[in-house]
Image 1 (cartoon, one colour):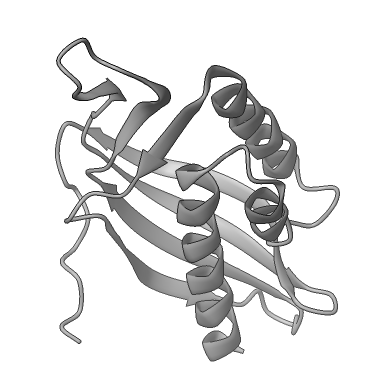
Image 2 (cartoon, rainbow, N blue to C red):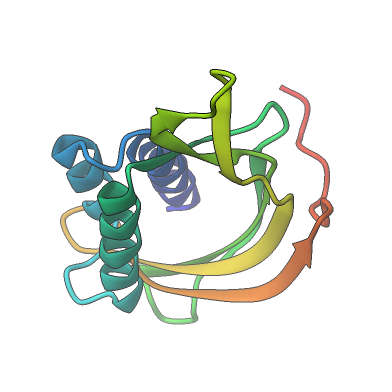
Length: 152
C-alpha cells in the first residue's frame, strides 16, 4: 500500500507541474484532476485556481530546487483503502505572464516567492488512489522549512 501511495503522490506532483506549465491545456488539467476524487473540496479549488491562471494567461514552472519529501504515510487502524501522506514541499519556482513580455523582452514574473509547506494528503483507494482531502499544517514563506531530499 505504501508503495502505491508513494507512486500516486509522484504522479500527482508530476501532473501538477505539467498543468501549471500550461493551465490552458485541458488534457494537462484533466490529468491533474484525475488525482482527486470527484467530491474532494481541494479539487474544486484547483479547478478555480487553474481557470484563473488560464484566464490571465499565467503559467508556472518549478525552480532548480523545487522538491517534496514524503515524511510519513499513516494508515488508520482497521482500514485498507485510506492513507494519509504527510508531505513537505519546497517551491522555488515562478509564476509568469505567458502571453506578454516586458519591454526589454524579458519574462514578466508575477510571483517568485520561496515557499515551503507541510501538508497532509488523505488518499482513498477506489479504482486507483485519489486525493480526498488536503490539510496544510505548516507554512514557511521565504525559506525552505522541509527536510532535505533523500539522495538518489
